[in-house]
Image (cartoon, rainbow, N blue to C red; front, side, top):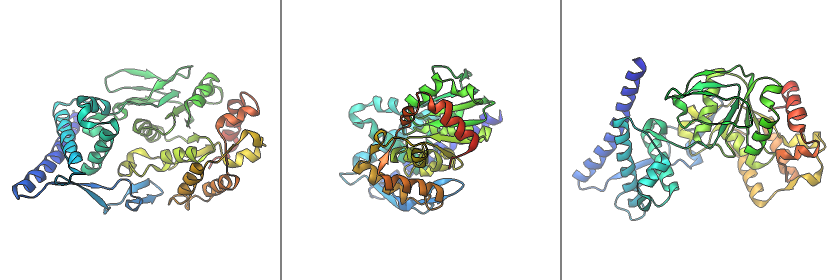
Length: 363
């Protein structure tokens, strides 16, 4: 009963927030003024501050952008924002949900592309200061989870993530899952699905010690990040990341750990600053005597991305991480996790991960 009352109370807050936006539009029209929607500039680093306990978060007084109704370049977006606000209002009222894809397909000609819908939904969430899932908008998960974990989904479906050849898709409504049970000693976030599947095939979750494995299949979607945060809040066990030793892998690790600029307004729900980088570390390549021929030269894009990461506010607070990035920058070489197969076909699950987890060597 208490949870139902809380849900109803929050739903009324969402409705009220949307009503206030519409009221401001009507007030402007009543004064013969062109209505304007004000949105925080989510891509501006000047709007971001770094806190050790949270990661990247949006500052209270941030630079804004105005979506004007009387400007030919912004008027279409103004109209689309009101359109989607109307759809959200109806869904919250009727307690129904839709995916971002569902919204796009209500009028593909009007919206033009899925990206347009995605950006507007994030802008609305930021403008209202309300998480996207509370707006009754879900997104299809691309991530997977496996290992020593069971839970109940919002509709009552019981899920058991046994570590077999197949994994379980990350739920589309992470907030709704409950009764999480696990005897795992740690969580391993794996960058690539191919590596994730290889570890499943090697029965890694059960061989060493019970664990939970998660993959976002590259850059993680919102649901995968929400799940990692929920697992951390629930079990408070160590979380390690297994990424390629390249700028892209570092970027992905930092998204899980510190968050992203575009979603910094939701940092408290999405980041886990205690996450450790287990591997593949640039310093591992020398330590393991990986053959130079197995490494891949940097592209200009790699150099640019690494230089950008090195300038971020959290790097100066992490001297060991900073040193690893300097090793990578000096070598101008990168390596995929699969490079370990040059040592032996099962080196990753039989030697590398057990040794790292037993003796340390993460940052």
